[in-house]
Length: 97
Ligand code: HEC
Image 1: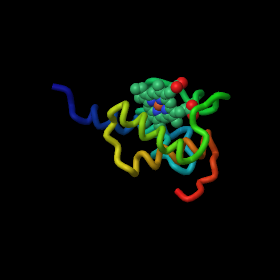
Image 2: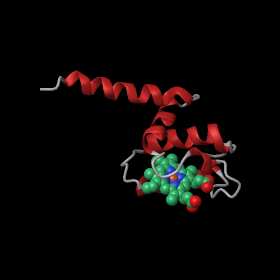
Image 3: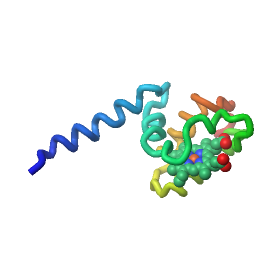
């Protein structure tokens, strides 16, 4: 029988590694690293013809991708990833949100 602590250790290591590139929203970075890099890499956030051109559009797109990937996130998790992506890649001024 496999000891239960092996699973606990594996779960504990995952977010620690994913936080390496994080700024002031480490949980957003960790969530993104764990769930959002399956279909596309971070390079699409900075490509010349990117789809997202405002903070509101960024939030909408993250929600759509989250729904599409069936992650079942709460508002806090969506918000953490939106601010991580904005801080790290998009750098929109966070007006009114
Ligand atoms: C099931 C596959 C899939 C997963 C998982 C996924 N995405 Fe996407 N995402 C897409 C596709 C497809 C596009 C549109 C690409 C295109 O049109 O070139 C996209 C585009 C985007 C864009 C817009 C990029 C731009 O051009 O500005 C953002 C932001 C984004 N995704 C965020 C996320 C986040 C955050 C997650 C994790 C919650 C996520 N994605 C997970 C498929 C996915």
